[in-house]
Image (cartoon, rainbow, N blue to C red):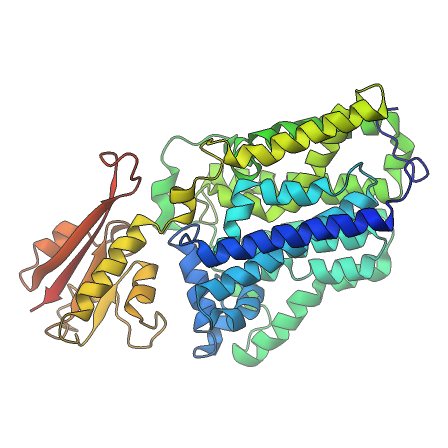
Length: 493
């Protein structure tokens, strides 16, 4: 039988095997921590830096702890490490990913998958999930809460599972949708006492919001993602495909795991056909709802948001990192499917080792969706130019004010992005509130025109502004003629 789901079909993993699995996890965590010390990459220069800054200045600006966009749970976790700089946040992210990989292993054991430790390797061999450790993004926190809730549910601890899942909406907004999946699971399992615990996170932050905002429902009323966000309308003109996030799974986990994932889906179908009664009840219905159900809802929701252009969706594939610990469980089942085709246990072992080698090899294969040192671990060109701009500013007389749009500019210039007296580009053409002479305007070619609707030509044609400095670098050093990132500094006369 290809899929022996019965609990009596597979012997329990030995303590020695568990020790080896956790030893492997510690080794991979050490590799991540070493990379965190060496890398100059930040995954991206926008949201990654914004989230870090919200945490970095949270103690100076306590309302950052209750900000819808930055996500209160994420800020609470990052605020302490962020005082050590972005590398302090990276260390925290490494720990979160390690915990997620460990919980994926526990879930694989509970599902009685052969070689459950493959889930650990698969997590670290997923290119985007490995890289997102070196950022300030919210995905690692969300992925940990999600796999922790799933693992607890599979271990027949429904109250704890519901309590952990309740914090998902405070880590990312998709959590509201996944609460419905957990609620359905608890209803199917008739775990009535666990259902109220799904509201724990909302109630806790609601009570805090009642004190601060006088609004118990502030998480909803102050939602940072309105149905339609006109700031990102540019992203929804043509080129949209319903397969954006389906094909995008290859970016998150690599092409080898992508193929094994679909084999795991086939394994699900065969398992349902062969063991319908077992799928109808018990922990195996948990796999269907908690693993596959959450994946369908998460990927399906993002597909709808992208196609309809709602909730500020930009079609960013990095959001799939939220569900990588669930994806690898399907990948491991795909490995089990291929190995089960072999006739002997020795042959099955060879198949698993060959697939393991392929999974580990792929990130270093040179593929576009694999890992590349300069692109992924070198400093981003826009950050390099902004560092150069900051060095130039340091050689000038201290300006009375600096106006900027790019989030990394605040970090490079050692400015508080949440300062009460911060002015944005809207103040540049404002004659009612004129700028002080000597004010510097740091213009970049992305955030300034897109976020602040200010083009270079507008500044260049302003007689009250003088261009003092500019520099550009290719976004891709391997294709210098393709595209460049550009920063210019103007002085207000």
